[in-house]
Image (tube, one colour):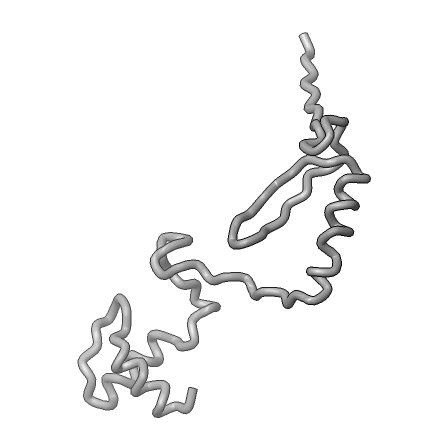
Length: 115
């Protein structure tokens, strides 16, 4: 036996049949509202003068320790850990083979190589 489920969105403003879901943010809070095409356009028109004068904010970075197991992807790091370890050993620093490179060693490396 076949079954069909139908999702009917209702305009949150006037109770009519909603055509779209609009996502927006204000005062660090994210909102979602289902609206008819006309009400969605009215919302956009109402915000238009404010959006025209506003500046777009860059996406926020995740806090340290969050995301994919708390690790920073290699492509995002500003250094190659193996190169830093090799340089550190050549310059008399004691550095582990694994894990995080100490910040003082990393800073000395950056100053030495100019990055």
